[in-house]
Image (cartoon, rainbow, N blue to C red; front, side, top):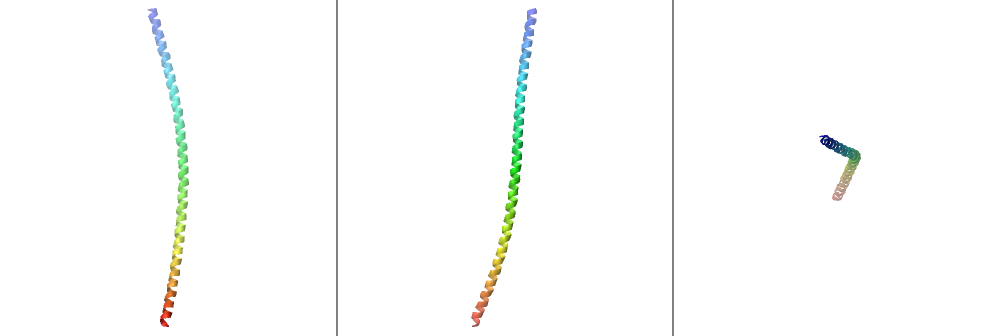
Length: 104
């Protein structure tokens, strides 16, 4: 009976050691997974910040391009009005010349 008790205690101690080893391994895996998750979270945050920075730059570039386009459009409209005015003046001059020729 003493031998049975001894074997039972050894088996219990072995099981306890095995359980402690398993727990330690599980804790180590959980710790490694936690560190990996923290690194991934940092990478994601870095990427988010870079994305926001790039988005801000691109939005700024877009605003600048839109402003340049508006300015160019305004300049083109002014040039077109000037050309229409010149054309009207030349047409009038041409009509005046035709009238003078006709009166001769």
